[in-house]
Image (cartoon, rainbow, N blue to C red; front, side, top):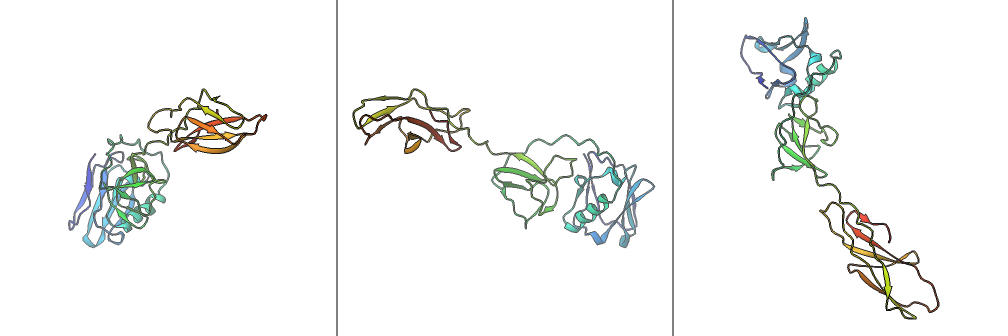
Length: 247
């Protein structure tokens, strides 16, 4: 991959051997009113009229280019390229370059803000996902505008939060003991969370389909029962993701 820096160089006409699949045009602080974009005989020409200067991208049409080829610090420059590329005839996009190695999130990552300006290499987080800016961007929500180099997206995902924990397994071995005319003691085997990474936070006790208690232990004494009456008890395990099926 190579970067072509667009700079002030009076009266020059530069011919560039440009590869849209890998190369980048860096406009620095150029604003949209300082350059023009055109296609002449199947070749992209970037002109800086006030400086009598041109850059010619050999054997490259506007249809060959994507926003991923453009880097600029001024929002108007990006806007100029968006308009130019949107008006270009459609053609199959080039094969994307191999994605760069994932950049681990750093303590410098900030929460994404629609009003903030981000430049290439800056990292942000949104809903537990970390993104790396591919170029200058503002207002483009990374959750909906992300992809690798060659996709034309301003953000690339570099890490994601751990997936939500699964619900616990169903408590097994539910039994009643020490039963009297007004009480009984329930016990069951402890549940676990498949996949690890989470813990069972408690158990919900149900009497005749109605929840009557929540506790952390694996035993519970149901009291105030009526003699000669049938009762149905069930237990469900709880964690951060929800509850298991009742036993």
